[in-house]
Image (cartoon, rainbow, N blue to C red):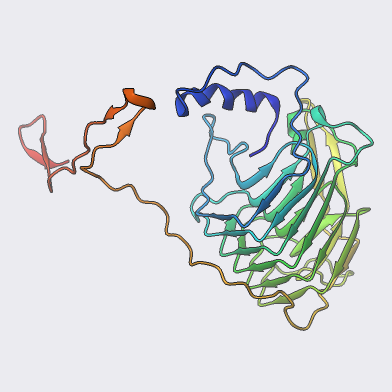
Amino acid sequence: TLFDRELLNQFISFLPVLLPDLPPLGDLSEDFQPDTTGLVIEGVTFENTVAQATGTGSLGLLSAAVNLNGPGTDMVFSDCIFRSTDELNPPTAALSTSSHESVHTPGTPYTSITIKDSTFEGGTYTDAVIMASIDGADHGRTVERDGFNINIENCYFTDNTVQQGQVIKLQHIRSGSVLSSCFTGNSIGDKALITADIGSSMVYADLFGENNTAPTWTCEDIEDFSLGAAHYPTTIEDMDDGTVQVTMSECPEEGFTFDASTCQVVEREFPPPTPPAVSEPTTEPTTVGPGTGSKPSTPIVSPPENPCQVCPDGSEMPR
């Protein structure tokens, strides 16, 4: 997660626990602004993602495998794999970006991302596989439509389940494209495989869809774009508590039907998924602490089978 100054300070304060020899860094300066311009993530596999709740029970910023919560342009995700999420605690998205006015200069592009040659397979998400939103508004800030530029090309979306949203959900999008990509076996909970705001300048071409499922289309006077791309009017309403409510209309005003007869994505060979990690008891001592002062930790020994404890009435029961 790439986020704002306050959360980075919290992370920095935790670093001595992870790296005891690290010199004190101190807090970031008041004028610090996160900037991910030029970030390149290439050839990385993100799998077995579990949504982690915060102390208040909310998912906060830990709800996507990759979450870009600060501004940055010319970012590239290439040859990556996103797969195998936790079905009981699914993340919000595989890749998410959201806007914060506190680190945004109005009139300038906020975020631009290219996602290419990547596979999104077998994941369960609550809102989307790829999502751009104005979550910064949840913190009492409103953001002008300088928004996002997101380009997706030569990607493969297969066997994903989105409980409440779409495969690609682009709110506050300014411009972008979805090109030469395939959507197979995905199940969505709302609207269309791809959604974006009305007024955004989006380009769609060479998109293939097969065996995808979507809820029954309710917009009788509009062509059914549920298995394609649809653009919806979005309203931003000021609330009494200092936040804003973002609402997407029930029916779109325009849409795009996938036009490719076959999948043009070049099939790539990936290693098989890694099973989720399971803690195993061990009797091997481990070393803790850096340098010569390190010493073995106390070995962890597996308990005997069916250990018992004495109940208040004197009987024994399995622990």
